[in-house]
Image (tube, rainbow, N blue to C red):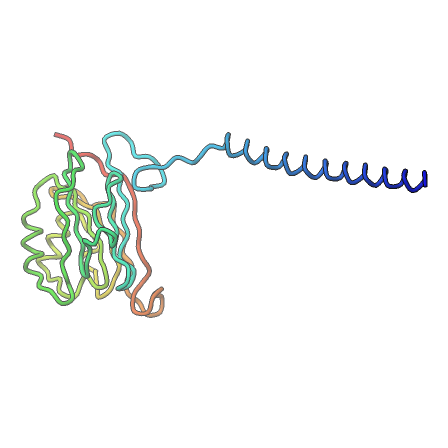
Length: 217
């Protein structure tokens, strides 16, 4: 009986020690995780979600073209989404956002159907843009079919290089300005090519981010 009692005691002690060990390990892991979360530093977030902060007297922007004819383009300036499908202010063709070059304040947002629409209102819109205005453009579905030479020239005057080659269902994003003296460095263009298209009939989305110099007096 004494041997059996001793054996039960040994088993009980072993179970207790094992339970204590397991609990202590779990507690230690949780403590390590909690301390890790407590002292972990979150990566910084910059305006519009761009990869690095802009220098002083610059405006942060990020934009993307539409995806096929399903997802509309998105234009963000200074952490303010100017145009997107969520805002329900984008459409087929060329989507345009205008902002004040000194303050970054949004002035206007519009889209012009370059497949089934008329290019004339787009030309009048381009002609009315004031000097010193930031101009951001992104295509959705098709932004080129109705473009004529006059419209392309007016966009080229804003600093675009690729507008002369923009074709049916190409994806294109551009940031320039009225009164710009040189060609803009902010432009991305992907041709519609059945051999390389990501979607059936459309190329992949083009994205772009950067820092726009603030207009000085």
